[in-house]
Amino acid sequence: MIEKAYHDRDGHIWMDGEFIDWRETKVHVLTHSLHYGSAVFEGNRAYNGKVFRLEDHTDRLIQSAKLMGYEIPYTAEQINQACIDTLDKSGLQDAYMRPVAWRGSEMMGVASKNNQIHLAIACWFWGNYFEDKMKGIRLCIADWKRPAPDTIPCKSKGAGLYMICTLSKDAAAAKGFDDALMYDYQGRVAECTGAHIFFVRGQEIHTPTCDNLLDGITHDTVLKLAAKRGYKVFKRDIYPSEMEHFDECFVTGTAAEVTPVREIDGRHYTPGEVCQALISDYDDLVRGKTSL
Image (cartoon, rainbow, N blue to C red; front, side, top):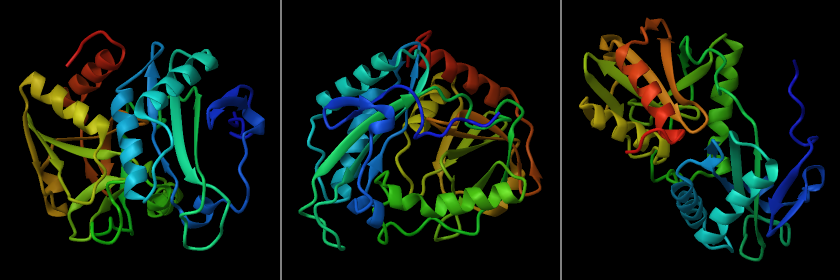
């Protein structure tokens, strides 16, 4: 079944302080962020009618904009309430939510300071990010690498920074893989196109701490869940030559949640005890059955 186009749906989107009919929520073709990639966004998920770690997502959105050189004209409290109101307006209990801020169309050119800053929030039902989530996904190695931290504002969840992610994701799909694993500018294991990565050896968990990765909220959550279970967690540089020596592998992200990996370019992993435990723990946490 073909999913209905995102511009042609029933419902409402919160935009600049008011709810607008979904199909009428539009921006001009000369919007500055469309041409220069300075929009910033978040991906939130709601479970049982509550947005998980909403305040942390909003704080990161505000910081992302600051790293891109602008201020979102709403307080964190106002953005949080707008997210809650948008979820309520949708009538959904489980939903994916996309707050996005961007520079408007008052001026064109590389310079940006005279453009108005806009904010919109939409939410919709979105199931598993990966179709084979429980079976485990297959990754190839991306041709593109995560850039050095002095070449991009890598701690901002900026739209333009996802260009190489889209290229890598599409190339992976063309080869029959679910996603791509990216190395960084020093050849270290970095992340997938929209998710952080973890490796497991016995009862030990290893995850990259590259200086050019976005600070992941789901990544942080899973680290806390792992510590609660008593797993030894090593946050360190991981190099490609090490990947064949791990037993399990999984990725994390708001959209991906906790998803096992069964292959990375010919290296095979068996989703086992640690993967299954953290999948269960994460589901219990986001649905309010447990707490950290």
